[in-house]
Length: 315
Picture 1: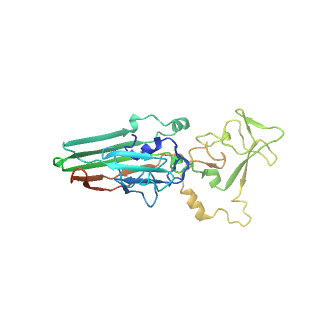
Picture 2: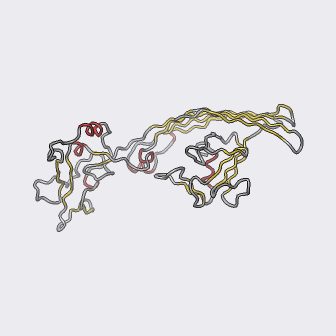
Picture 3: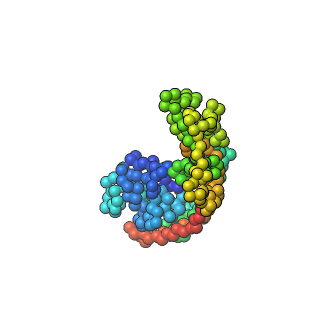
């Protein structure tokens, strides 16, 4: 279970679709329902986030070690489960028993143990970093045999990850290259009667095929125009110098654009004026979580329990 989050088992259910890049909200749809159409209960008590609801990222950080039962109903819900058109997710926490049981664990993932992602490897970008340490312990047993029991669990995490920026923001970022920042706009002048073919590709306008994907320099065979009547070449227009009001580039905007990183990926954009900056922004996840539960058997037909979940989470 990657990430040790039992709620992600929902995504394995038939009829459940999970969107990733560009997906709004939680991106999880159950049999065509909206991504907010679900209900999560823990020990029969509603446990939905009120701010940004997500069925697999609940505010109670459950682990596979402190739950006893996980149930998903995606259709024909019974009255106690109804409330929505999507999934009803019921979680029951663990309790102690007549025997003492304890567990300690440490779940490790590390960049050195991983291969590069397919798309990152194809684009020649750096392997995303992941250093995942999830550890904890649990203990449960009797206070009074056959009558009263306790259960306690502790979990913690120290996770350092990086994720490609196009995945973080749902698509690549576009930036002006150095030429455009200087006030010069470049454009390809095509000759309709004699199309320009470069490496088997017919070029009719600005294209990333015109430049080196790493440096942005014009590829061999691509040239700058030598006159206003030249064709099948890259022409330039200095809009800053030709500003009829003689204002040029606004200095405030110029400082803002200069503060952005310089493009390093010319496979994105128009090739001549805009490109992308590819990198893996870092994210850290920290915070322990605790669960305590006590059960008391009144008689063969009645029992009571208390349960507390708490923790600290930040990233």
